[in-house]
Image (cartoon, rainbow, N blue to C red; front, side):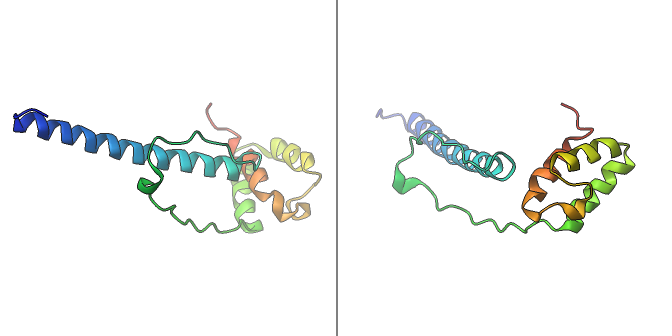
Length: 123
């Protein structure tokens, strides 16, 4: 490099910023894949390999997910019903092969909840 210490400090600061941005971009991509897995079709989205060397990749962060209960789903459905979406909720239940929430298998709660939460949401 040059004999200018300010130029070298600036260069080092830029390199540190670039490393930090790569780290943050990786975390955002991991979060996006996790959300797609949870609320999408259950198939993880393949992501392009990062330019960061494997040794520099931080360890994954463990996130504990609490399974949805019938009460969790019922609370959201009740709120949506009070907001005037009763007919739409009946259609969502019917699309899942049920007339009542108690007839729905717990495995379908995440997709049912996602569909209900879309009701009234601004696009």
